[in-house]
Length: 254
Image (cartoon, rainbow, N blue to C red; front, top):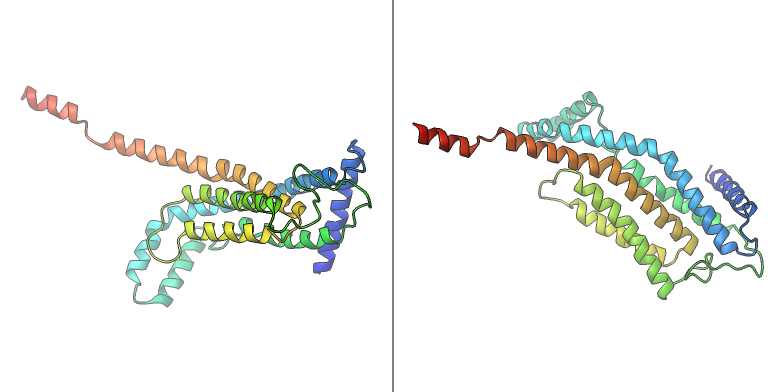
């Protein structure tokens, strides 16, 4: 099954590369043509994942709406974990909320990353072809601990951390206790940065491009609506407060 998926991705990627070359990119500039192919591939993958991102956003919004009810359940059944789990599952089912649905769009690129790891190692570049791209000398050769590798690692870490940070800012502040989302974001970004040192640069470029696209999606699907909702709540709370100037004026008239 896994081999069939990898073979399908190899055929798809080779097709994209041939398409790029047919557009006029010099055949000997394989570094450029393969990078352009992976960028197009990344856009396609992210478009396929987009419906899951939208579904995840809606699920997270419903999860925030039922938080008061969940806190009541936690207080009511704090000494009965089994009953708490049962009632929480029931509440989430009634409101069409999935505990793990919000994680799927974030986790899905990882198996694709590992599949691409095998895809790129199965590609044999043309002997004598120019495999460079920007500051990268060879897009198929892991950079290791040099300036190229360190720069790619920093970009990979940032492209992982910033979208996660934006997502965390669009969600309510969690209660104290346990590992918070900020710590998890830092750990995930650090892990991706470290792993990218041993990855082929073309694979790291896939992850960076995916992170940039995820950043844009997170801004429009999560952060922007959350900020609008927050401002609307603040405006409503401000409007509900009594006007001190009016009250003072009334007292003077009396």
